Length: 270
Image (cartoon, rainbow, N blue to C red; front, side):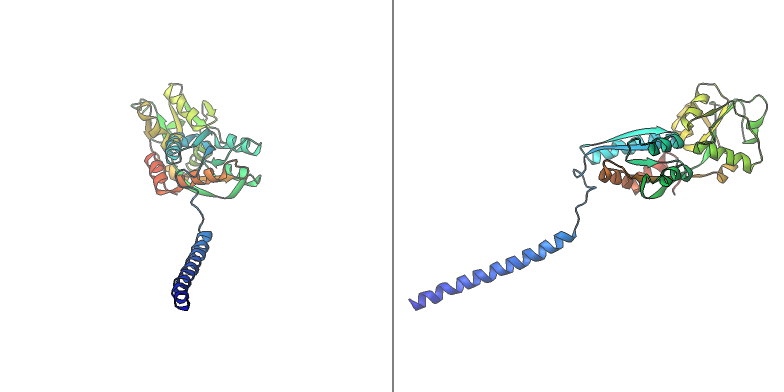
């Protein structure tokens, strides 16, 4: 009886030792897991709608990135509101629901940050340069910024409150040129449309918009544009309803993949 008891005791002791070892391993594993946070930007982890307010000049590239984001994160939907950065900033400070703001200038972003409506510090993700848009073939033979000041020439500018308008005025001031446009437009797309519809001979817009317009306009570079390059900041908004998805979208915009799309559209790296 005693001999049998000794035989059975050893397996029990071994089992107890094994169980203790398993518990120790489990505890160690649990400790390491607790310090690792799940990647909320991974596929399948995000859902719901992300509302992005973005400068009109970002329309083509952000639409592409939005479609890419939705493919990478099934169950999400990116909704855009494109327009003049000043108008978008006013809407945000006025309480319009949005998750992300991408502005065409630090000045218009400051409207939002000064109102306390941004979460964290905005980050510059691209830069943009001006170009003169003319009708295809450049019938007016416009070769410089000075050529826009010739009598009888119909030129359109963005409103000075809009980043593209402020940049154009900065370039004109640097050249000591005065220009009276036939109209001031509320965003860069509206200014470009005036040329496309042959309602204007030229417009001072972003290089990216000339490229996006394809063969409907022709671009003319001018050296003074180097004095008026705009930085584009992006920020998560304080009252974002889908903050995690919004952060992931911003991460995509700033990633190498996002930068490839933006640079391909004609934007400059930050």
